[in-house]
Length: 347
Image 1 (cartoon, helix red, strand yellow):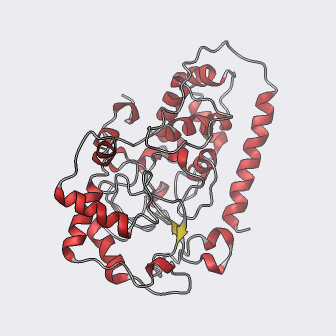
Image 2: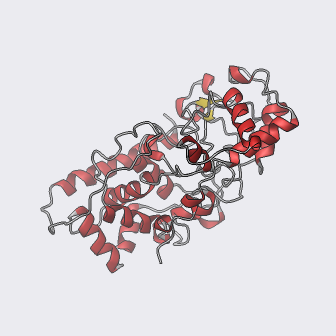
C-alpha cells in the first residue's frame, strides 16, 4: 500500500473511533428534522444507497452547504471546498489547469466536477476513494489542498454560534465531531443533481435538437458513447486514452492506487455533462478547449502497452464532424444547475 493509502486509512480509523465514542453519548436534544429523499430524474438509473447511515434532511444539506463554503475548514482559513469546486464551473475548477491549495501550493490534478455523485462507485481520477466521506477527508487533510486536521477545525467551528446550534439540531449531540462534518458535507455534495440540460429536455420530449446538434449526437453515439454512456455520460471505468506523461508531474493514474503495471496511465472516464463549463480538461487540465480535446482523439494519441484498444486507431473525424460534436456537447450544459441559489454560497 502506498503512503497516500496509509494516511487515508489512518484518518478513517480515527474517524471510526470518534463515531464509536459518539454512539455512547445520550441524545442532547429532541430533533425535528425535515427528512427528504434523493430525487432521482426519471431517465436516470437508480442511485447507489449512499445515505443508508446518513439520512438526508433539509437541515443536514444546509449545514453541508455552509461547510462547503466555510474557509475555516482549511489551515490558512482561506481555502474552502468551493475554492477548487466553483459553481460557475459546475463545481470544478474554473478555467485553470490544476487547483491551488493552501500556502500557494498546487494539487497534482484538475479538480473534478461535483454533481450526480450518488451514482458513482468510486471517486477521484484514480478511483482511490469509495465514499463521499472519505473524499472529504482527503481534501480537508491533504497538504496541497486544505491542509488542516479535524481537531483544529472543530475548535474553530465551535466558536461560531451557528455551527454549535446546527450540529446539535442535525446530529443530536452536544459536541461537534469529525464524523458529523463529513456526513454533513456528504449530504450536500451527494444531493447535487444536474439533469436539466437541453439534452435532458430532448430526451423528455420537451425540446428538439438543431440540425447540427442532431448530427453531433449521431456522431457521439457512434464514436463516444461506449465510454461516455448516457445518461450519466460516463461508464465509471479507468482507461488510458493516449495522453503523454507530464514529465514534471509523473502521474501514472490508477497504477498509483493498485500498483499494477497494467493500470499505468489509466484515469477515470469523466462525465461530459456540463463539459462546456468545466474547462480545463483532462486529469491535469492540459487542454483549455473542447476542440483541443477532440483533436487529441483525432491526431494526438500516443501508443503504449496500456492504451485502450478502442483508441488504437484514434477517432476519425472530419472538421465538420468535429464541429457538430462540439455543438452536441454544448447541449449537455445545465444552466439552472450552475445558477441554483440553493447550491450557491450562503448570504
